[in-house]
Image: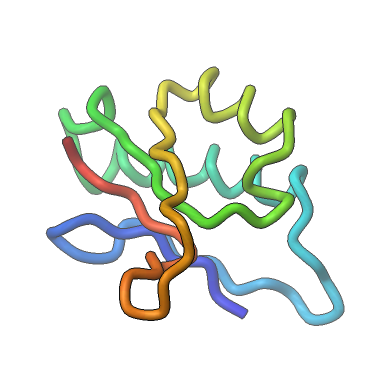
Length: 96
């Protein structure tokens, strides 16, 4: 499984989940830290305007993850109600 973060300019960070591994809040927080470093490298000057939108899976909404999102300086948009024609992608980094 792949975790992909992108903005309007393209992919910023891509990670392949190792076999027989599940995504938990510890793994996801590590991915967010890597995302922050990737933004510094790939999108210089845009880090202070970081907005995340992801689904409401448990690793994404755990208290540890939400605290890390705040500590890393991201803003998390609320997950919209489910609709087959409006469902957002699992992960993404949006520039404000």
